[in-house]
Length: 417
Ligand SMILES: Cc1cc2nc3c(=O)[nH]c(=O)nc-3n(C[C@H](O)[C@H](O)[C@H](O)COP(=O)(O)OP(=O)(O)OC[C@H]3O[C@@H](n4cnc5c(N)ncnc54)[C@H](O)[C@@H]3O)c2cc1C
Image (cartoon, rainbow, N blue to C red; front, side, top):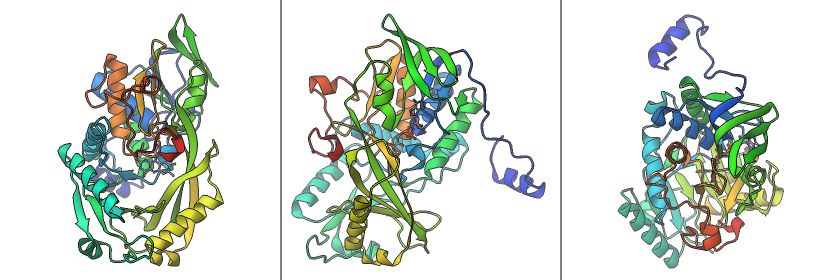
């Protein structure tokens, strides 16, 4: 069924009885050409592009819970292409271009809003680093503008510019950045994949990966064994656990990242803002809630909830940057499990097991990557060659040391990326 204004009018006039489920709920078949483990944003986008671009439809997405119940439905929805390093910059640029056509492509309102992102800086050194990053973004063909404090004061009058410790010197503005409705992205890709014949199987946990003579032959699940010629592991915070089913040890640690939302307020923040001297970034949702977050909790964990010290830390930073936030009431907080790689950049690659492929290491930046990741991973699964915009996301960079992409320049400690 095609969604349109006319359809809404027709359904509204006929008691809304004609809407159909957005996807089927099929029983798993005994065999598929390709199995995708994980029904988050990346898994669903991969299945969609396999069907839409490569015409492969004998595919199942196996999800242990419900579609969109993982990080895809827990993030703070920021979409941007302001990476500086080769490898990342062409990939995220490609992903942003896909975002810009996504609603038409999927016939689904994912509420993509290019309201701009401003990264604040608070010292001369930080200004230099942002100027360098801005030039890299422009060289890649994307947009970046260095703003001084007068320009910033016009745009963001409510910030505390003269904080004693970290006065604001300016900001790097990325106008094409913004936000999107996170779970709608999962639903849109799910609907598009289902429409093309992909089986989306919920409540189906993968418990084992079958390998014979160095070749993958299928998976064991809570709904029985399923055979497959190729298997893609796309399980974000559970990547180490699922890869261990095939005897692999990944350079990934799982850490919790929290987010917070206030009660709905009238429109007051019309961009995304990141604080350069504290763990804090913020935007306002279309429902009016101020959505904000900070850094990882300080220890690895598989719990999808955060700790109170980090909540206090994030809110302190928010109060320092924009004291007005102290008047808002916090409505909810939650956590998601991040697949932190040792250089902060993702892995999209084959493994040493024939037919077994990996897509992980998205750290806390994988939402903006969903369209790009789905596209390039589908390309790898379908053609066994690397997509031109994802040639550097090799797994072996962690064993050879060649090609590491440490965007944050923080070294090899997972939780610092
Ligand atoms: C609080 C928070 C804020 C964030 N903010 C941003 C942001 O602003 N911008 C941004 O770009 N990124 C952000 N991220 C990161 C982003 O959400 C993730 O990088 C991205 O969603 C991960 O990919 P995914 O959507 O495929 O993961 P998920 O949605 O977690 O999908 C993985 C799926 O695999 C399933 N699974 C796991 N094990 C198995 C198994 N054995 N069998 C079957 N299924 C299995 C899980 O149930 C899950 O549904 C944020 C994350 C969090 C938690």
